[in-house]
Image (cartoon, rainbow, N blue to C red; front, side):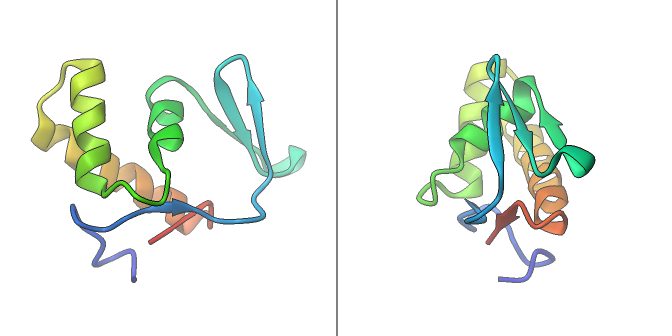
Length: 92
């Protein structure tokens, strides 16, 4: 699925073969010279990507965990996942 058409019903999943290290509850993704550090809510979203949950389901988890509006959570999750798709860390 093209990241431009991914929406609430899309099921994001982590790309196999991506280097992931857990560091004190955060995630370091990629190689040392091009690593991406996912902290707090970004790490929470990343952990929620189990290949079964839809984007809307992940947004509901975020809304519940952080006490934010579900619609806003969905917008934020879609934007974040779009960034991860561009970096080839997540696919639809």
